[in-house]
Image (cartoon, rainbow, N blue to C red; front, top):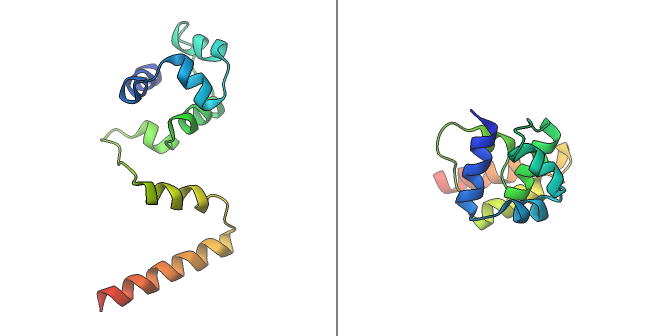
Length: 105
């Protein structure tokens, strides 16, 4: 996958300018200019920041198939999940699995 092509696709899908992307992800316009006009390959860290601006993960960025749309509820869950400790994540998964098994019965 060509990173620049994918970035341009995401700009078009979101109907964003490069200026808007810079504001959304907190990168300087110069950094984005280097990527778009000069064809500089962004570092993984920079690409992660760009993905955060688009509100997608790196895996979604590199997905070959159509991206899965997240509902507002799923996004809220995902956004909060990132701040949980491993023990808290296990507890949440346990509750979800218990709730699911209750509905399967």
